[in-house]
Length: 620
Image: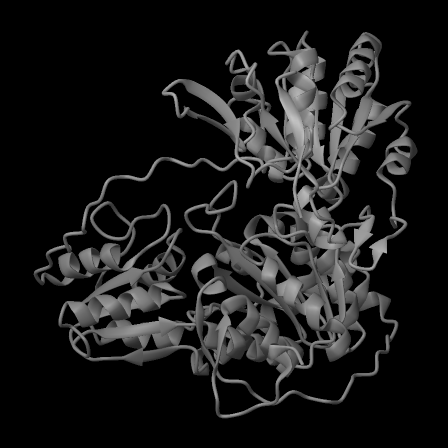
């Protein structure tokens, strides 16, 4: 039995925040789950996928976040509780559906887990998605701990179903990826029966219907505000003339600060977990009981602006501080030291930041493509043919790491799928070759519309689709073009080549990038064809070696070694840069290049560029 399906008991389990969301959804009888993976939310869909069959839950790795939200809302409209999850930028993709779904509403409970990423641990921006909840007018819950993540998922489903509106569960990286004790509640056994009642004048949002639903949404917001006023997730601790208002993981930093500064119980703290609609009466009463308030929150001044507005409207004479150079920083994550410093300064108590033991800095280890990664081989060959003359728009995935030396194969990136569209723009205004890169999963996610647009407008560029057979960066999740599973080789649901040709592309080539000579010959031919208008597409197809080994159990039989006739030209280091290469002093004191056998993947690409590199069988 999966750990997340064990019966309720008095024993608490140590769960990730993401795992706690899964458990809460199971306790809430969620039977439909859809998501596109994205850190820090990926474990939610991955864990659901593992327990789906045993739990009787339909789980879908959707092609993108918009599709995941639309499929999940259809289930909820049919009386089946649903959940979709995404990272913060995923809500940008799903926003079109999200904003109108708030109008239409749902019949069964639906929770949308949106994971923000303060400090950009694995993201291209640091947006604060609390603003989306306010803009859409949907209820929003913000857990501080894994236990609250479980409780709020369950509560969000109930809230959603009661008011027939989707509920947003807004998490952050430190909640998603922290572990904490979680109490397990009862798992329901009954399975809902799906049904759909036609009601076009409430479900088909033409302007006439939308105007009516807009007014109904405003009425729901009033009722949801009353729910927020009495929510157990909003509460006050401590007493005194000074106050703190906080939410999410910042609540934990506040607790640390008050304890370490000797202020525990001496400062009133309003902890908000149901943060939209804002419980105005609760906040107003809190403000009337204090003389000064510090608002502690990560990223934007979402709570601060609301609290200041309430104080002004209610004419409450209280000093409120929050974001500012001497208070709470607006950029990046908070931590205990930052919060202690702000609390001490605000309430004028002494604080000496701890002296942190200093040790020599470790050598920098920038993120890099794995040994044997076919993307490295593709980049090497493209650079050989196009050099620095070409402009290289890239996309989001493992291959984004091609931005670093020695490959330097990324010139522009904004979001999923942007490489294709921006390549079209560059090609129209620049008299230079344009070569765009996009991964297989990203192509399905957001690259297809850009490709159709490029074909219809005769944009002149080469699109290289890096097909490694999986969604590698977020943990080897499936996508429509996957050919390998634990059951062995399968027929892909959708062939990338068929999609490309279906988009109208005439110049299409398929290569194994680990075959250097053939790949470069094809690239030379495609470069010549770029003199004519139109898009060319090269599908560089070779499986991610980590994924292939995991799926097939195939054992490596050879590694490669640098032979004694190496002239130390360093081309392997300067142009390829595989992490398996090592530059060091030999036993005789001379500098030499060797290949770390523990890292070598046996891909044989380096042996094709240097005659001094030869294969060697692995014994046993």
